[in-house]
Length: 468
Image (cartoon, rainbow, N blue to C red; front, top):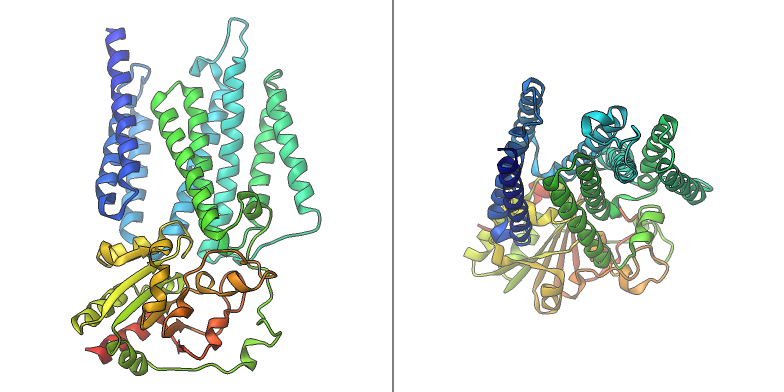
C-alpha cells in the first residue's frame, strides 16, 4: 500500500509540474493568459491536495486553519486591490514566499528529526545543511528586499535611490560573510552560525534594494520573483517535495529570464541595476535651465479632440501616469470613439513602462482593449514616423530622447518609443516634473508637442466628450 501511495503521489506531482509548465506557456501571451492562469491554479490544487493526503500528515487542524486564513486573505485582496496597485501586491506576495522559506528552514533546523534530516550520528545531513542554508539565505533576502520594494511602490518611502559612502563595500563584506557562513554551516551545525547568516541575509536584502530607484522597479520585481522561486526550490529539497522543487525552479528560472529581458529593454546590465539606480539625476534640462524657464505649448481637451478626430492614425502610449489616474477604461473609450470616427488607433507598450513587467498590458487587458491593437516597442517603433498623432499618457522616461542623444544621461542607451517622430505629440501630464529617472524630457519643448496638463483620467474623459 505504501508503494502504491508513493507512486500515485509521484504521478500527481508530475501532473502538477506539467500543468505549471503549461501555465507559463499560457501566460506568455495576453490571448492565452486566462487559460494559463487556470492551468496554474489546477496544478497547485493537485499539489496541495496530494501533500495534504500524505500519510506523514497526522493532524489537519492547523493545516485547515492556515488554509482558511490564507483563502480569506487571498479572496479579500483579489476583490479589493486595484489593478494599478498590482506591482506592490506582487512585491508583498514575494515577501511572504521568502518568509515561508525562512520559517520552514528554521523549523527544520530546530527539529531535524521531524523532517528526517538526521544521519546515524544524530547530525543533520551535509546535503540538507546546504539546502537549508541556501533556502534560508535566499528566503531572508527575498523577504526584506520585497518589503523595501513594497514600501517604495506604495509610496510609503521615496522611490529615489538611497545611497551612502562605502555602501558597495559593505554589501560585498556582508555577501562574503554570508557565503562563508553557509560553507561553515556545512561542517558545523552550531545554532549561532545558522541564525547569524539568517540575520545578515535580512540586512543585505534591505541594502540591496534601497539604492535602486523607482525607474528600475520592473527589474526589481522580476528579480525578487526569481529569488522567491529559488528559495522555494531550496526548501523543496529540505522537505523532499518534488512538486515544490519543480515549482520553485520554474519560478526562479522564469524570473531570471524576465529580469534579463527587462534589463535588455533598458539597455542595462543586471549588475548595473543592482549596484546603482535611476532616480538620482538632477531635474534639469540639457542647457542647464530649469523646467520653469522654458516655454511649452499648452493645449486643452478641446484642442486634443480636434487634432485626433481629424487624424488618420493615432498611436497611444500608456505609462505609469495612466495607472495612477486609473484612466485605462476612459482611454479605451477614447480609442473606440476615435475608431468610430474613422481613425486608426494603436497602442504602443514599452517593456519597462509602469512598475512591474507587463504592467501596461494588464491594465489595457482589464479595460478590454483588443489584443490585436496592442504592440510592443520593436513592432511599432517604425510606425511613429507615419503616425499623425502620438498620444502619450503618463509615459515619461520610456519616450525620452535623452536615451539616444545624451551620453551623460543615466538612461542613455535605453531603447525608447520614438514618439517625437509623429506629426503631433500630445503629452498628458500633471506637471512639468521629470519621470522616475529624474531626467528632463526634451520632447516637452519641441514644436510638434502639445502639453495637456491635468489629471489623466479627467483629461481623457473630456477629450471623449469633445470627439463624440
